[in-house]
Image (cartoon, rainbow, N blue to C red; front, side, top):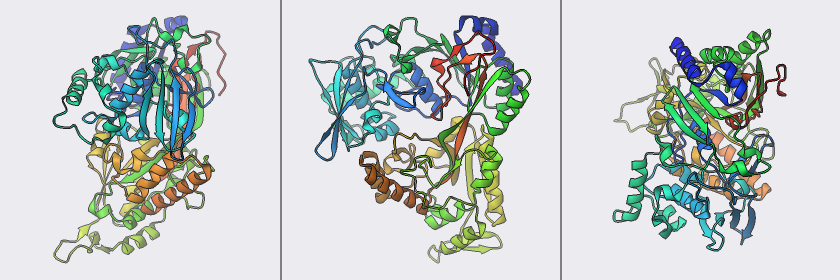
Length: 584
């Protein structure tokens, strides 16, 4: 398999250009991805690679500026204006750039924004995750005399609405609804519908057009107004994006950072094996190698100490490594059982083993650097097998020769045995290390654990279907928002709430946190939420990871960052002056 990847890299390199040509025309950047994006529909966005790809194809109202760490105008001509309405609503007004156009030259209008938001709420489409994330937007006001102006009416009064309302791809109404049939529905009407009304031919026809277009695999059928178009997608091998020769943002002077598109071509090569990817970087068959493990980063840096052909970056991130339980399993419904099993993870040792001690342990989903909202009164998760055994007994489990059994069931029912299946992605050795540590700790306590390493293309599907007892995965957050809807709200079961955990109390807390603007009140809500999640234990937070990146020494302006994906490929440029290296 390793040699197959090398042959692929050589083939891609030969098709594109030689290394010398690449440096001379400053035009091509090759990035390694661990996994395929799987689905390029803006409604779905199943993984970070899909998000990154869609960011090349589409524009949002606002975009994160990797140079400043702040959200800046992209399609919008300026940051939005906020106006509080009563004590529970906020109006957020935007104005679109006069220059923004679709590829056919038609202007990007407020009606396109309204259509996009309605598409995210329309029943019958694969939009469950987007629907939950944008549910706080209750209405869109348009102004016929000013076709580029619109106002979003939002539930809650949160300063973060100034960027939360702008972080989604804007789609062309003409591509799916040329006759403007969706305009007869309000956003609130669509949000109230849980399924397609059987006699609603308008919505049924729209869903049919979306399915026929199949933007998941044919993104060109739902074209965006971003700087790039996809010209090649060989699933599980590579994707190639080419810059549009005439892009609307080229006319802006000065060019905003978030609308820079320097490389003429961006190629993402999918290589699951880290050693193969590192070899490709050293042989100049790749230019950017992000998301490196600690040991691979150290080995690569040592190997390059003589030649000094690479640049290395390590940055604290907002990506959390965690385990989760399937709370719908009868043996895992009790929080005491989940607490007990959580005591068998050893975050401190795992941090040393997988990150060489780097990273940041945490009590929950809030990053410790967010000191105002982080609940530092809670204990850090720790490896305490004796306490695990005590909690199991408290939950009604009894240890016998064959293992742990629970006899809480009616007397006529057979005792329930505590045996677990642990699922994780097979392409990351960090997950395997965690799984092996947990299995060994569980075995010492008499709990059998079957390990289920899973290909990335099947992993999310297995979690949605509940085909696991516990999983290990990474989740991303930001310091800007505290919206835990996708992880733990009942509305997102099973689309993204894979633990299937929810209670009326946590649902209300999640909603209140997302819509509360007063810092003191939000702090109180967040600290309470962290305490409840730790007590209920649907998740076991292990630690926040650092991002490690290696790149060709001559490649500049990557802007390494703690925000996903950890770099900004569209701003990258080649520097012909040897010996010049970007600041680390």
